[in-house]
Length: 130
Image (cartoon, rainbow, N blue to C red; front, side, top):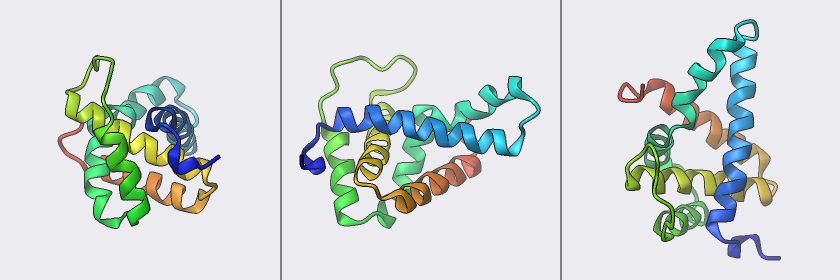
């Protein structure tokens, strides 16, 4: 199976789960004693607006292949209506998640972790994300 040809929605589905695990792990490592606060801390990382900010800032650092995955996912027609995000933010967040899913499936763990780490740093520094 050629992973580059997998539907970007499927890549995003997987990438969402992988990203969530990394976000939760980072939170537990920072503050393992306050489980109640972990969810509230993590919301900014998993919201569409945070992921949109991250992928927009990371685009110039991505390889051509990675940019291609992001563009394909961003341009994929959405069939569901986003609940808590603008359609543009939702598409960009889906593109970010598709990239994570792609890197996971292609076993580029170091690169995937680098992208996730940078995304979380960008979101941490993003004043407009609440």
